[in-house]
Image (cartoon, rainbow, N blue to C red; front, side, top):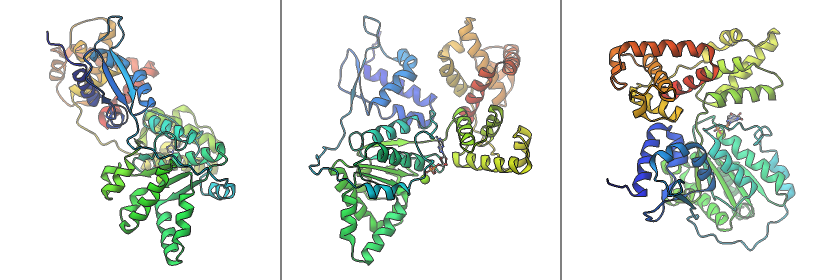
Length: 445
Ligand code: ADP
Ligand code: MG
């Protein structure tokens, strides 16, 4: 028998994960991991940071076990090293100056609601939230810069301000400045006009934490890029913390190579659209902040229909609250349907294949695709098989005979029986209903 090297095992695992994770999950948790060294006995993984290591072990241990060799004692032949930052740090001799008044002024620039306490975690943002929190606890000591990217309304500014609040609160002697890229450019223009650029430079270079929102706006103002880049380097070289948000990853920004390379020095983290459960939690949390309570059912009802971004979700909630207060009505699903049906979004339907369903269900239940397509009647295999058959009938417009055949040559009556059974169970079993809903969304989006 040919034995695979640990590196090959890892490559196969990564390939498998790429097929069954969402692109964001893969990009955040698997892609940054590298194989270190050439050991034949065990797989040594170089992890970008401890969060990724913990996440991998907590969430994908089962899958790892399917791909990696084990040692004589039965444990996985796997060990980790944490990658050292690419840049050689230059230690600052200057001690941070006490600059309370500046911080007081800055606090007012931060949205008071954008704190870590009000940020709801889910699989789409867990990584970036831990990284942001890590930085807020120890600014300048871990990843520098932290680069947060993702689509509109997904919480980038919220996290940036949360870092601002936390650092100001917990490190009294640290000077923090939060600014939009537009604002930075405007300041620079003003200072150029007033011949006070040196003063501005001194100000920026005296900061301990610089938070820059929406760096993509630097793309259209390229003559300011150099000044930004100089400020950036001056701070990084003194181990001052920089956090940047953007609507795209660094490599996709139309900026100089120098600037892109600087932004890739530290940790690049992606925030994506929250899944259904997280959207429900966000809605309930926001409602509570506004002093009203919405039932889980209502939150679910809205979150199932609005899924592009959190800002829209919040807009819907505001509208609902205003309406129900004006009319003196309780918030019910019916009111929701009447007041905001036009806000509800239609899912872009992707073509779903039996293959994708099999992979997704296999991961959901921790079984192998080959088991689902096999003939075992053991419950731990038969049940996932029935769920996969149910999803196939629901999501794929093909003959039952053809669909059943894709499950390792089952008959159409087996498939129909599975579909009926799961349909019935969904009505009774809330957990199963949600599991299936989630699988559906992942497959269709
Ligand atoms: P972005 O900067 O990515 O466009 P924002 O940070 O402005 O998005 O977020 C838009 C709105 O959504 C804000 O009101 C923010 O509080 C809210 N929001 C986004 N993600 C979350 C989350 N995970 N938990 C709570 N609120 C969130
Ligand atoms: Mg923003």
